[in-house]
Length: 474
Ligand code: ARG
Image (cartoon, rainbow, N blue to C red; front, side):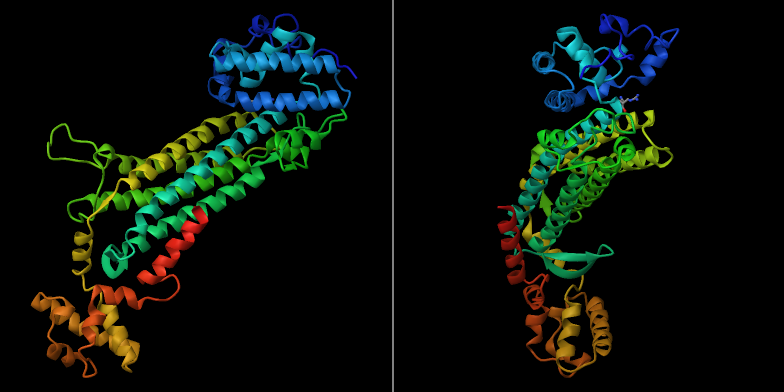
């Protein structure tokens, strides 16, 4: 089967002619402003490899189906190989007048191999082409991000492995609550990033579906073998409704949601790092290479990297809002609005990639000030719950125990002492059942060790969790 020349592409020299009218239907060329306003090549050229991979799979399938002949397929392969070389070496001439990555590559192909290049677009539209390209590109980025997410977890895990027995105050309302193992605290972030990795893998499944074959919107009259194209490109399924195939950007929304949640986790960790490094906490120090100084205050070492990671979560969340808003009013099917999906998506990928890399590195350079953490844990009556639990074990109802300990804390505050520093006689004044075994209970170590429940902060449980994460992550 052969096709008549495409009516939308100029026939002689597409690079020269594109600055003129779009097709024979038009009586005048686009204004320069409209050209600039509608062009996307400045940013979507980033999709070039996916575009060429998609075109090659399409061309080979057209050949196998007898829609174009073997010489045309060979010519397209030859032309595309040259184009890959030109793009990789920076010699490819991207033309704004050719609007986007797709038309730039197709025009150059036609320049190089003539009519075979003009046959490539048989049974295809830029609508299914761009949807295919973005999915292919994003799939590759997802795989890279999955590696970085594992690295982030490993970095936290490695730090945690040295600190199962390091005690820090656990907070609620940013008030000292109960002592916890520092490793336990770090593993909370490992859990968050592990869930992010699950979300990412799930988003990948729905990204990895092939739109090609939907053509402009309704499918095509050529006998395409969509399964063959999917196999060639590593897609695990086909988009099964042509109208949905060209207009669906759920995969971008899902990815962007994943990225936003992940950046929220990064941001919370970054916030804690900033707090921990401040003189008022002094729980950690960061390696100098992750800090900056002040132009006026010579004593300053600022945790800029952590602050920026926290700040950059804003733009990733903003991109999610932008993409959701982009999609919400669009009637089926493809609309040019969709061209606006790329910059937010690209920036989301870039921001998340750089942020995960730098945060993983920075966590690896954290120096822990265990003595300061422990001193802080001793300050806020963090073992008051342990005293209440102790009384419950002696037979008091929990609410009565809670009240007795509130009195004890009040007295301790008035005397400027920790609960464990009150004499046994004083403690017995709050309840007669208190014996000298209470001091073990009131110690930080005793408090941690008491929390043996699955998921609790007892160092024995924490060591099991560390081992399980290490087995999972390697
Ligand atoms: N540059 C366009 C985009 O990113 C490609 C698809 C254009 N399709 C069209 N019918 N104008 O969405």
